[in-house]
Length: 72
Image (cartoon, rainbow, N blue to C red; front, side, top):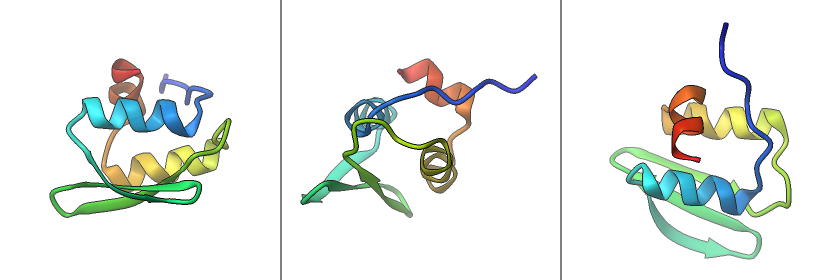
């Protein structure tokens, strides 16, 4: 059975992605741009990310839910 998406904030998501080797490129307003190799994407700094938003971020980062949960 696939692992469930956690309920996390934008800041928690960024912390986990930085642990995975992504670097913060810039922040403007309530959005932060992250980059690693050819993968560039935006993470909103919302209090709680919606499931669809988090799933899209993980897809763009080419990360599985299991791997993301491990770094939280």
